[in-house]
Length: 317
Length: 171
Image: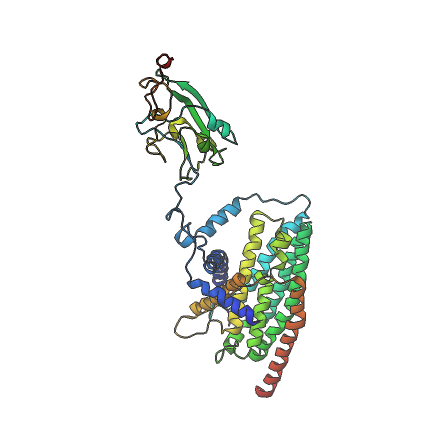
């Protein structure tokens, strides 16, 4: 099943994804404020919605500065990479029946590949800044994202086994009877944690831990280059939430309401959950982070895969 | 693991708690009457200026933000020719109010004096003078001071005896 109008879907998904990513900045500030018994931005426009617009105008007006000691071409290209890789992943997301840019038969692998490529953006940014804090942030990002990449892929293999396909559309269709969150609950939890680490959200924001590394890999960035990292991070959260929706919560499936609405409801639930996690949990130490990934998450993911494989072999053959 | 879930739940419960933020311009904060804010020059109950241009406030000021020039009117009553407070320097310490012997200079519960132009923070005497007596409604310096001015001779102040005629108490 391919989209009848791929170009329309392309433009639509691009606009909506970027809109959600920037709206997410507002949502995050309001929700964090709510959970800290504050109001957050509520002055500019209705409910402070235009705060994002004001911030955008401000960030565009900022000086676009490249430090003289930076490796200029790499410094400039690094923020673009994260935007490109994240936006590429949106191409394979089936939002609703017929609303998809490209129904790749290896869509899941494509998503994993793109999120792996996103690491380059962070590492190159940290390297090109020629600043010890940036470099440490970049190094941490490389180690963290590669470690979490491993069991992120493995945690998804259970879904692939059950659906029998790497195509995201087929995976959604395979959840017609039961959402994969039920048979693959462990895989869901693992993917959620890996997704948090992959998008460098707060419990796992070691690469930009502001109390230790100033701002980590983007210490030297300002203006719209910083804005790219910022929006790229929010795009990443949107992407991970959409992927969880598609892989574990039946994508657009749902009673009564139209499919598009179901997709957005589920995605927004996870976006809010990500923000709640940010509001609640402290940042672990870096060695704890790595130990978690390799000594706990990876064995769990392997065990999950093993059990799922055995059960699939025994009952679904 | 359980503590992580409990933390999430505890934070989520804050959605239903009252917010502590005070929406400031709409809900102004309560300022106590002795708040040290915008400085004013007050007047006697009969409307005359209290300031006698003694320079004590300018001397007490740790940041030298008060400038004035004393002069006298034809009746011999002292008053400031100009009185200037540079509020871009003022630290609102209140030493001027403590130093003032006539209760003329007073700090008021008001801090909303932002300006876009720094020059506008220099307040002249006509900006500082208020029409009332401020925190001391009954105090009238010239009525209690034993100083002779036009319209009030020696010994005519409140609780002041007439000057003793030295010749009348000769032995």
